[in-house]
Amino acid sequence: MGKQRVLSGIQSSGKLTLGNYIGAMKNYVALQHEHDCFYMIADLHAITVPQEPAALREQSESVAALFVAAGLDPTQAAIFLQSHVSAHAELSWLMTTMTYMGELERMTQFKDKSEGKEAVGAGLFLYPSLMAADILLYNANLVPVGDDQKQHLELTRDLAGRFNYRYGETLVVPEPFIPKVGARIMSLDDASKKMSKSNPNVGSFISLLDSPDEIRKKISRAKTDLGREIVFDVPNKPEISNLMTIYAQCSGQTLEQVQAAYEGQGYGAFKKDLAEVVVQALEPLQQKYADVRSSGEIHQILRDGAERASAVAETTLNSVKEAMGFVAKSR
Ligand code: TYM
Image (cartoon, rainbow, N blue to C red):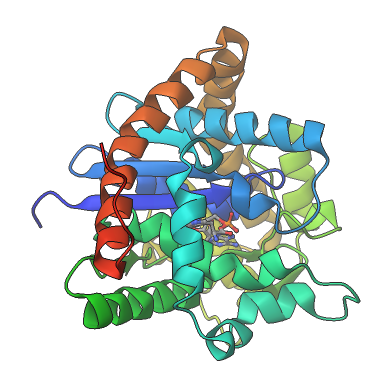
């Protein structure tokens, strides 16, 4: 694989979880040295549900610092806030005009988030058109995401193809880049639901900033299946399979190695070790996070990132507008 353009993003709508880390951030880090990477804090996506201004500001800076703490090198990858690059909002409108209502109505994330709500913001409905704009602005070939973003990626691919068919070859059709193990980390209290920061039960997810004791407590209380064997068998042992996935991803072992290591042992011993594996994986990240926050360096990182991102995004936006027939500003 030659040098590829990579774009991805995480919403700044709450604490990041171990699911975000395993499903997405680990791959951001893995891709940064060989490819041309743009990683964004999706603050415009965050406001598709109501946010307190002070909380939004804090969470956006926190996610940016977590990117660096997780191992992203700002001299390699551009790290920026979506709202700092105005081309995102502008291309989003252009993409919205090319998106069918039926396509948006079929999005499972929209159905989940709007279900049972009396008032649903239009932004939540249009969210996938903004996400398509995010990706297409950078001519991204690869988009590292967890499994839950696959449907949004499909729509992005359709929109790029539709645009090129209507207006001539302009946009790159992107590919999702999804981890083979850990693409969907499940809730600790119910392995039929994905681990999510918006779950009101805080015991259901591990936040990247949870203290070692919180992590130990949450893992010791995590649901397990009937029986006592540590075997990877998603249909029959969904809870243990999820915990094994977390173990494998945090320790760098394969699922087979984890299974072999715990043959003949019970859930208690396994969970105890798992807690330590997670604590150890997060310790350096948490240390680095504290350093990054206290140094204040994040502001400069975001300024540089936005500058690099804007240069690419503006160029694409101009080609799109020209292809669609907008009159260019005269000089
Ligand atoms: P968000 O903020 O919900 O999640 C960020 C990333 O984390 C992954 N993820 C998970 N992976 C495995 N297991 C889980 N339990 C889990 N929970 C979350 C998500 O798949 C995602 O990769 N719409 C996006 C943000 C976005 C974006 C983009 C992504 C905006 N523009 C452009 C890629 C490209 C979202 O809400 O992700």
